[in-house]
Image (spheres, rainbow, N blue to C red):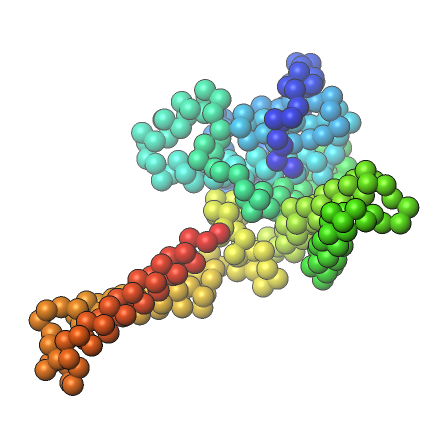
Length: 330
């Protein structure tokens, strides 16, 4: 999981240099094999810090490019794969960003990175971004299993299996309906039989947590689990922006050809809408022009011509605004 350490003290982490060094060597070896599998060439300056924690949680902290692994999970292929998967995703996006910047931009990025700034300084957190991150986390588990060998002594057994899509949607709807009913009754001071007010609050929070787990983990995990790795260029996948990843792969009929539009007909309709809107604005301006009179346009007088021009101009503007909003919507 992508970790947020804001609520935890960094003193909670073990500072045993021997343990850290041993785990770091192990993780770097696994990163090398996984990056070779994906085709991503990771510069040494982008390799993460690796820390053993005394907390029962694991994570990748993107802010300081650090992987944290609990002492009890040092041989968990599932958790190591998950966190390395998050790191590879961040590294892939950074490399893609550096490629666009040119030499000077790369040097500036290196300087900022060494100063401990975010690996992706312009990335703004939102829930959809988090969903995409978990997709790559589960993909990391799959990739690590493919590149590991018995000498690694990694355990890939896990009780956490992604739901099938047929179960995900009905479960979310059921939780949503139950939560709404509980909240409505709660404000009327009506609590489920046998439950106190505090127990009801705790149960509502439990439902919210369960729904969030399904949305943030189960759904992305499911789509990663059905991905056909033989049909996709993994390097291009790891460098693809979040929205494009969701449009192409958060669906049963995944769009593997990255040279083709992910939105297909929708994208074409959006373009046609823009063209029609521009034409409407152009015609509207012609009708509003002083050069056109009622004599030129059939039996329309100048007043009617101006009204028609204004209507077409406004319709065209509204059409452009709607098209742009749809294109920018994530």
